[in-house]
Length: 389
Image (tube, rainbow, N blue to C red; front, side, top):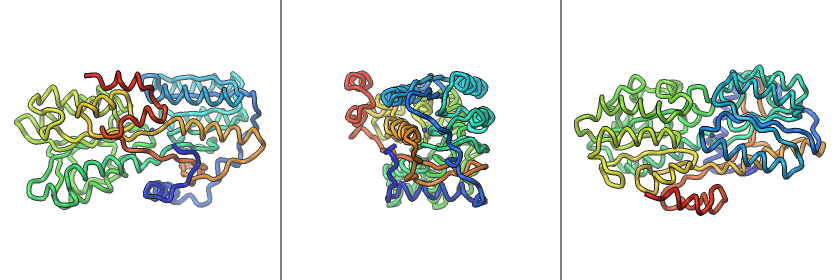
């Protein structure tokens, strides 16, 4: 699913700008979303439509947005859609009826929500796509997100480093790896996968990495970025991921075979993978060489626990407080009669090029897990609770 409107001159920005270019192919004549932003003033209602309360991430996002907007002098109506596209459409219509002048949407399904935000535009609302781009509509004014490809880049580089692939760590005996992608209805998921696959594919081609299971029809050197849905986990669901990993373990690791790494794009998916490995292979012991390298994303409480106890290697932490601040800044800028600027770029949603701010993510391992406390993402007491056995 940071860092207000800074354009980074680092690898992070290079990766994301490549994403902008890829999304912009064939769309040179398309308009810009900020050209029809509506009028809003201090004291107006701002609506927030979050996808679900089931994930820790979205509860934090909703709370941050509500706090920042209220502190800036706006009335806030916050809704959660229970991961239902139809419910989110209803929620957005309710926000319009409640008099919202701006609506912030973290889409359950970036395409299905299009007609609802079109109604918001018709009602004169400013629409901000939050973290997930809303597709195939001209009703989106702004997009605020993280450096999408960099998430996969961080995860892949962690695996590459831990397996010493750059120095031929798996040259003599190929290392077994399993790979998962995000939800098939999340427009961010292909970018996460691309960031990882662009780095890992060369090691499949050289023979250092191989996938012995038939997950997604089997991953080989010829697997393409566009094939990512074959290994997707719908709704980023932990139980779905566990079921998929159960099938992998039964097929490819039932007789003592070594599993070296698992590319997981999200902490809840990682938890499902961990549960499956524990159930199928009690001889694999966390914190030892028998346990695979497992990645993740979002810095969830469960990830802090798993990383601390050696069950997960890293998580890509996205300081969503900064994302909320950038979103609030867009609204306060509009209320001041000004036009937001200093965009990181524009993302093509298939209809228009949407002015986009993106923030920087950070890799957390056991060495710097406490960062979440230091930046105020969680409290010290929560951290201590997370690391309990």
